Amino acid sequence: MTTAAQEVCVPTRSASAYLELTKPRLSSLVLFTALVGFVAGANGPIDILVLLHLLVGTMFVAGGANAFNQVVEREYDARMQRTRNRPVPSGRLKPVEALRFAVVISVIGLAELLVGVNLIAAFFGALALALYVFVYTPLKRITIHNTLVGAVVGAIPPMMGWVAARGEVGVGGWLLAAILFVWQLPHFFSIAWIYRDDYQRGGFRMLSVADGAGLMTRIQIGLLTMLLIPVSLMPSVWGLTGRFYFNAAFLIGIVYLAFCLWRRPAVDYQNNGLPAARRAFLASVIYLPTLLTLYMVDKL
Image (cartoon, rainbow, N blue to C red; front, side):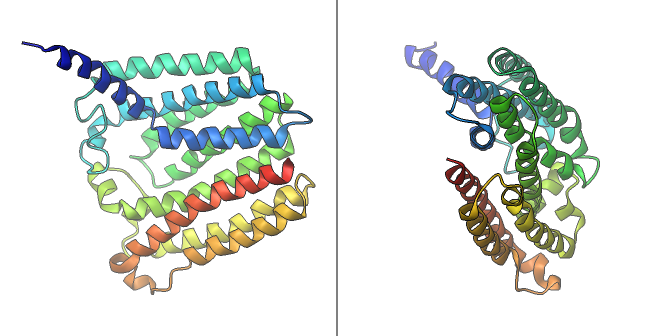
């Protein structure tokens, strides 16, 4: 016999499961980068109404992409300790329920961008959604180079913010996209090493899984973090930001690089590299919001 308390708890659990499908923490980063792109691209006062349409539309599209991803990867997620408790593999939501939800919020998000922002922003939103669901997600089980496509997807939101503010694609939008693209690679590689065994159980093709001793993972993270320093300074080179941003970006780039230059020999990385990978990951999580906040402060 179903009690009144049980009837109340079921919808509550379902609401929580649907929210979890959208990966709120990842979606919040997407929203933040879109916000930075809008502020960076704004000429004059901020148009709050357009900004709200941008953030709402981006939130729904990002959430829809994440929901689609979890539907497609449900069998593989069930094999991994990190993901087996997600709504679909855990049985809290049926695949058809999650799929229906993904379709609905994706359509709402794209419509919001089209009607409330502009056609170009809606195009970029649709492009990011398509790349994430139909290219990046299947490539994760085919090639270790899937991370490059994932980085392209993550580089699109600041471009959406820029075109929402200006109505056109500009150099500033491309430079922000370049920063996001380069940053995501060492960020992803450090995550992939932390969860190396999990990815192997799930059948995902990651650099960390193919890289037995960790040498290539170490080299890639180090080189890409070095590359990120000059890329992050390009807005100042193009005259989009001032001396404050240039100096601060250079300083935090050096600090981030220091966290990524592991001291242990490559031959020891397989056994002793986990703490170093975690340091690199945490440094990347701190670096990006700090850099983008400095950009907005300089701009404003």
